Length: 316
Image (tube, rainbow, N blue to C red; front, side, top):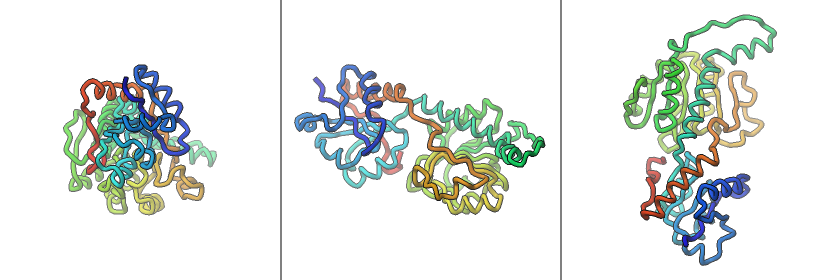
């Protein structure tokens, strides 16, 4: 019989039991438990764990651990924690097609929100002003995507299907149908210069932290709009505030922040050109995610091979 598989999460994480129930349903032949349910013999036999940003101290209690399967697509915090304590551990992140579709849907929804100038109509409603605003056809609007991984590719196709012109930028060059692709920092200015609505889907790494700063935001056309569904620290908040106040950025839809929940004294809450969302653009679906985790663990049980893991130098 296989040793039980612990599910480890951050202290106070509210969805632990939901995850355990979903994972157990997806893996009826395994026993999914909390760390506290393991005895010393169980801990000594565990070679894998399922995690949601756990404490490195908890992981240290599993001396034979070879790899961890994150239930999140973003693993920058986990990578940073383990670099300091257990750099040898392999990290497998969640790659869930449902998550990509959910993100693509969210990007399309908020792109249309900006494209049809819903912020302008909200302002006019507050003024009790009845006045149609200028309309632009989707095929005359260029949406630029920062990040062309699984999420970016699904999003690009959804935007193209809605008749937008789509540009994509990534660290390494991609070749995607219906997308004008750019790669590397040397091509970032060219990509941004003709972008009307910029969507950030990048992972947070040492190379992407602060990527959207005073200089790069300045490369966007005057009045461009911004959607950040990636990670807060990719944007320099002071630079964004300045660009919004000057009118260089017309509106920003922000779902992620350097500190979450967003503190109530932060300027984003009340800025008239900002829409604040509570990190809700692409929630992980417990059932579909658990099926992906189960498939990877079953493959490991059968072959002994650890699934494709995160490049800890790149950060994803």
